[in-house]
Length: 227
Image (cartoon, rainbow, N blue to C red):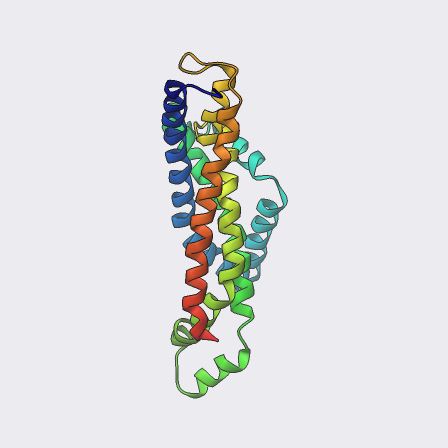
């Protein structure tokens, strides 16, 4: 046999444990990056020039450097410079990697938001002013609703990318699903030299990506009435 029943159960239990960390990182990133990205997009479009350039510089740096480098920097540099130290153990690694992911994806989301907001015809905003609507009413009742429809496809692509990018957390030894799969090659729970657990992790990502793709597809169909 390719593997014994006991071996399979041990590996799957370990992979499930790692996959829970992957799910945790994914949802924390979405919860944090979606609203933060909107705030950053407002900064990028601000009429206050210093704020606009500061925000755009931050977005340029984050989008122009590898996420894996950002994870390493955020995790190691504060301690090396005696600024602060992350909590010890797995909790500290999870906290640091969540911070890195939220900042990274918020910057990507901000550009999508900015494109969606600026893509709404200015004439509709002017029409709202003529009707006596305030700027906040125009944004929430006219601009925001149309922006949501425009940004769903590019946001969906970023979310699918996030599913796979969670594997980068292993660079600081966070025990996500890829890390757990690889551990059986080096020696874990009495097993070593096992290659198939690492490749078996692809099943987790395929299923996860498939579920996310279906959910986002349904969301896009529900927004058809904005056309």
